[in-house]
Image 1 (tube, rainbow, N blue to C red):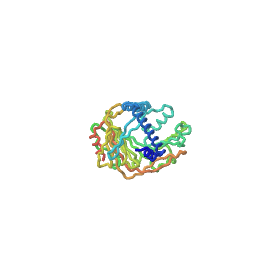
Image 2 (image 1 turned 90 degrees about the vertical axis):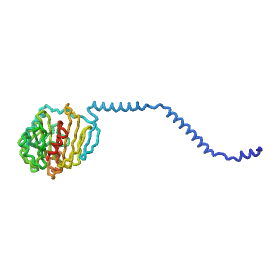
Image 3 (image 1 turned 30 degrees about the vertical axis):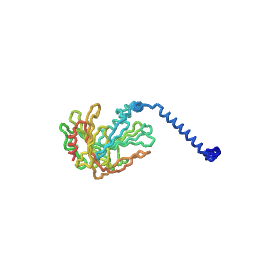
Image 4 (image 1 turned 120 degrees about the vertical axis):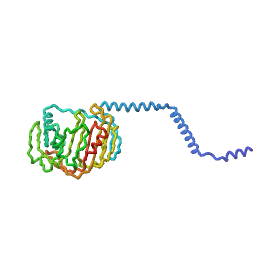
Length: 347
């Protein structure tokens, strides 16, 4: 190629765009920086997986220990449904502290005043004065204990309250067990007007007013029946009939993590379930805890209660309806077959 041809070729070449050159340079620099950072990340030592797991477990265990030291325990509970299905729920649980009673003069008086054994067919009202620790900011001064009851120690006396409709007893009692005692609770009929009734007992003491009213028995006003059977060796079977003002057919039942549920589908109940908990700690004795519940719809039954109106000592009456009856058997000593046989005999 001649000299003038070389010069013409060079001058005819298109010059690159300055902005494109600048952008290319910047992109190259960015790529280099990114590569350097990537190399840094790759070369940064990682914490071993086992060590990370160990630290996580240690933190969790420390939390559990601290919560346990505060009296809380991580407990699994099963929730059973009347169709036999269940779900497991974990929650912090604090055991109940042993029940203690105050020994001051007022507490001892009120314990005796409200004693279950000496207050059969009695409604109790306590009107607390402003100096009482029970007197609250909500202005509620009155406490009504509307559970008149009867204690029964003779099986023939108990039979008087069994109507064969809602209130039924199991016809089969396991060998060796016999009736021990029962109690029957009543609701207070709407015809009872506490403001126009004369108390059978009234005393002003400790700045409070203590009253007792006699409630005549009415078979139509039975709330529930609670029966105990024993074999004479401190082994018990507890049976009760209760009523509810809501539809419990779709209710739930609680158990421990190792509790098993079984739907028996006994014909006399609309729903039923048998819960079994092995290795159950009953006051230091390891037993198998079993409980049966049968639920049935009943003819709606009007019930009456008391509602305390804040700022007044006059209780207001209210009404609702019972719609379901529940039959419960609780025992730590019966086999599955025995408790099922007992449940089948509730007719």
